[in-house]
Amino acid sequence: MLIYEMKLQGTNNQYRQLDQALRTGRFVRNSIIRAWMDGEVKSRNDAYAYCKVLADNPDFPWASQLNSMARQAHAERAWASIERFYRNCKAKTVGKKGFPKFKKEQVRASVEYKTSGYKLSEDRRYLTFTHGFQAGTFKLWGSRDLHFYQLKQIKRLRVVRRHDGYYVQFLIDHKREEDKDLTGQQVGLDVGLIHFYTDSVGNKVDNPRFLKKDERKLKRLQRRLSRTQKGSKNRVKARNRLGRAHLKVSRRRNDWVCKLAQRVIQSNDLVAVENLRVRNMVKNHHLAKSINDAAWYRFREWLDYFGKVYGVPVIAVEPKLTSQNCSNCGEKVVKTLSTRTHQCPHCQYSADRDENAAINILKLALKQWANTVGQTEINASGETDLCLYGETHSSKSTRTKRKTNQR
Image (cartoon, rainbow, N blue to C red; front, side, top):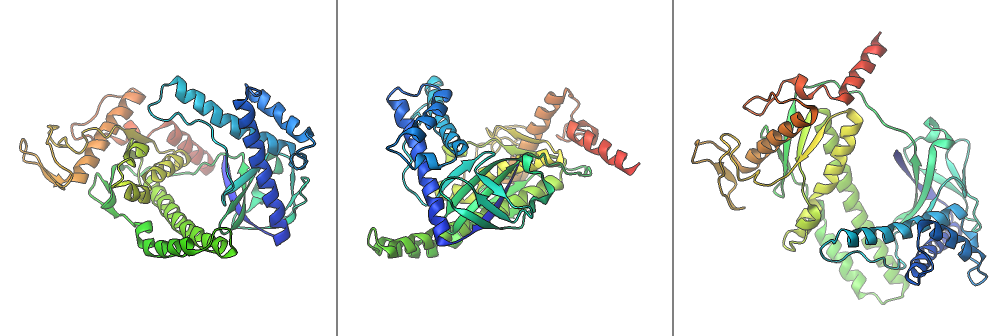
């Protein structure tokens, strides 16, 4: 699946109609949550049926103006939160179980359409909403070209409201595959806060710290927002300025980790990473802001995505003792976080702490990969021949496809 995002250009009156659609979608979701709490909705099918009840209710005339499939999409959201709560209770998750909550009015909101409620122009540059709110036709602004895909490939359409405008996301049924030549390189990555990551070769990538660079500006905008009167137009303007500033930070961060992950995948045939529980790590309030600013989880997501696109295995290993064990002899060398150099008293091996951890991560990944594919011949140094890990199922099919095209 591909997701293409474009910005909607229209008039203020059209934006107000979209706001009504967003509020109606939130109303449908909250109503289903309330019906579940009252015992009227007990399954997903009941949630779907309750959408029709809301549309036929004369007390809620705005509910029938929203497209029926859009109502069903919000019913799916409501029931997904209920299922998550049941799943956490069944698994006896420690702490809060995620009891479904009612959505409140907020700047960021969205409404989904499946296959009806909208219409694309022939040149794919204009989008018309056909639901009862009569939002009209919007011009699409973006660098994506929808001419490469058929209309039947667009499975869903989502309208998202942000601080800087309204956007539309197209969910396209298309599997992306890219050709890649084997490089004969494998790498282990150890992420950190001082350096974004250190690989098993010793290369380091600096942590850009996008939030820290703009923190003074964000604090200034936050103070201006706090001085405004609640409910005033100046408060709305100040909130939008602050929201746009946060959007710039998040977009720069996401763009940076996306390009970095793609370069890592394109230059290696196997990538080993740590299976970090970022949600648990941010519970440390002294490091939570720095960890979130580093975007380790987002980087891991992009690695997995590009690994599937280019046919490169991305193996996640447990981070336990990767910093303590010696990568040369395997003995445990206890170190504090302030100790940045690994010095083994058993074999006299000395290396950077993060580089030593990256080598251990790569060794664990190669062992795990060998067990997965049924191969056990691994060199003592932790390296394997190219045929052991480079000839994955994805790379084999890619190379076969390339040879066929050359013929």
